[in-house]
Length: 236
Image (cartoon, rainbow, N blue to C red; front, side, top):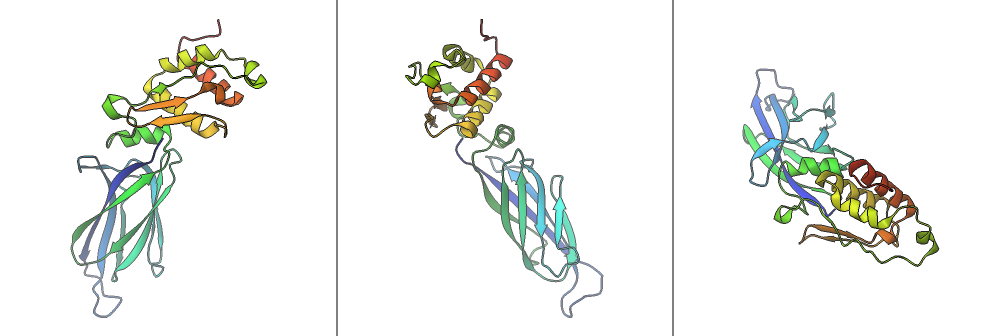
């Protein structure tokens, strides 16, 4: 799966308070930052691509690190000074940590800052979340995922000659899988392929090509178990 990009929006709000200033000439302010996701039309939506946001504030704060586990991942604090904070966003389904640098300033009572986040080789659960905000590579022409190019030429290696799985039936079963299961197949192949494995992503056609006879035996068995579970293909 190629990289997928999404835009997140940080919304900062701040106002002065009646509390005595801690630094002469600088009034105390209450401020907050929350995180939204933008869909492909620029509309705001919940940032449910992430499981938590960790805010790293200026070290002078009594509690300089805040971990927020629920959308909109809103942090609230008080202080008198402007500073740059680091926000680490943890994506769902082992989608990696994404670090954002945010400028906290008091020039406006409310301001927004947009940042592009790149998800590298996202796994199936994250892909489904990404689809809620726009298409992902492979969705072109209405095709979400498609297994194509199942090579029927048998390998001459003794390892493949002893293969317990009927490769013709495996190829047939893979073609019968539903879209969500096909995404799982693509992820399984990426995670378990060997250096000799032949795979190809055809983004223009929304197809994933694989030569089954170049895949490791363990991966073949994993794919077969999935096909048997999800389709009517069997050993008989």
